[in-house]
Length: 118
Image (tube, rainbow, N blue to C red; front, side, top):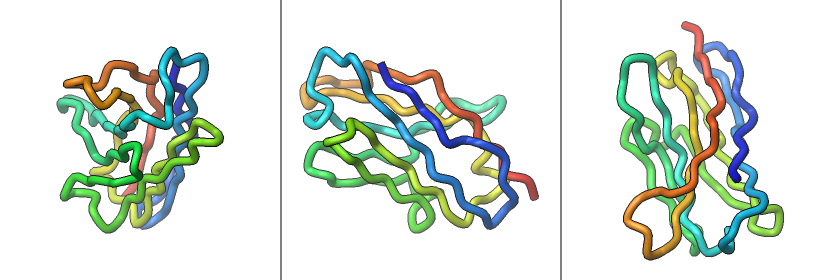
C-alpha cells in the first residue's frame, strides 16, 4: 500500500513537503515510477510530477520550478517538495505507482489534503 503524509494548511508563498511511503508491496518499489497527482474541488485529477526508477523526473508546467520530486529507495519513500505555493495548488494530493510495463498507475494512496490560503 501507499500512504501519503505531510499535507496541511499553508499561506501562499510557503512550502510543504509531502511523503509517499510504500509498504507490503508485491513488487519492487525501486523499479517503479511514482507519480504525484492532485485533484482540486470540482476538477479532474491531474499528474503534477513523476519520478522513474532512474530518478528521471517530469513536471506539469504549472508546477515546474516550484515543485521537486525525489525518492529514497532504501526507505521505500518518494517526496514532493512544494515551494512558493499558490492558492491554485490547493487540492488532495495522491501518490501512485506503476511498473515499467504498466500503461497506467495501478496502486494509489488515499491522499493528503493541501490547502493554500491567499
